[in-house]
Amino acid sequence: MSNFLDYLTWRGDLTLEQDPFNDIDALLLATLSYVDFSEVVPTFGGGKIKLKDAAEKFFELHPDADREVSKEFISYGPALLRGLAGSARFGGAYLLNYVDDSDVGREIQFSAVEIDTSDGVSFFSYRGTDDKIVGWKEDFNLSYMTVPAETEAVTYLHKAMAGKLGKLRVGGHSKGGHLAIYAASVANDKFADRIINIYSFDGPGFGYNKEIMLTEQFKSIKPRIKKFIPQTSIVGRLLTNAVVPVIVRSNEQGIMQHDPLSWQLEGKTFETCSSTDNISDAFDESMTIWLNGMSMDDRKVFVDELFSVFEASGCETLSAMTKVGVRGTRSMIVRMRQIRNDSGEKVRALVKMFFVNFNAMKDSGNMLGLVANITHNDNR
Image 1: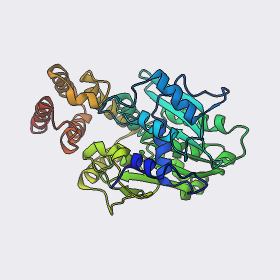
Image 2: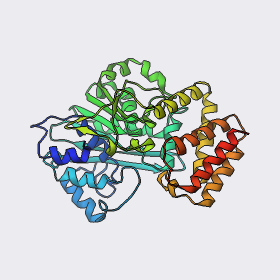
Image 3: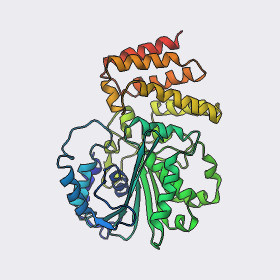
Image 4: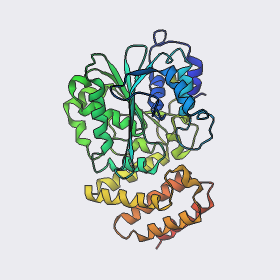
């Protein structure tokens, strides 16, 4: 049993010429985009930097980044950067065209970086949702609107491909996986035709824009889409999925399986499962029934009400909510009691799923009080 950092240690001495690019390599590069490359990697028109040099520059700016202890998703990004930089497999790659745009007011989290690998094929890595609440809300916003990050993803692909003639790969983890599929589906077809593979690692499907899956361009790229989800997938089963995914075994529980470091490998392939589990299935069934019964306006109200409860905690991240104090817990309870419209019951049910079924808050006494209040509201 091993994870992708173990794989990098084991396989990093082999170049892509010696052992061709595989799905685990794609996960490594999809996850690399979580690193904050501000002041490190050039943006459009600024040239490129060798990955080894980018790592050196990054750690000059953040000397303790890969030793800091954090419970947040993808906190190991700097350690991954150091490992890639020290490998024969990717140390000679170049990084370029870095973009980072995050704005709570506009409800957008968008970031991407191009990785020019030694096999002559660029990998466009779209950053996914970390555990910031604004990012998770944008995932749910996909159910009723074209979110700003989708538009940005297409613009990025066009701009990065302008003037290039070679092949490319696109991919991302979480929302980044959705953005990779979306961009390939609606981009100029002369660019889409040059995409070797599109990788989605536990990325959400299509909601508001699900008609895209009926287009000729989507049908042409569909055979090149590779989607992977853990057995307790939540984000990856949100909305309508484009392809049948590969189900990967994780050594975490509940929603923490969204973290790809928990995904188990056998050599240079994923350890797979025959099916998703009951928690994932229950979430998928509930969300499908609810969303199918709502208009687009109703979906917006539902999402806004749901995340107003999370935001009432005063926390900016889901991981911070594991340590929310009494004041934050009370504020969440008050906010739930204020929801009197048709979304109220659904909001309470989904919050309960997050904090009970997924064990995300199992060590928090305050969360037990919140769950008790949710149950009380359900029985009124």
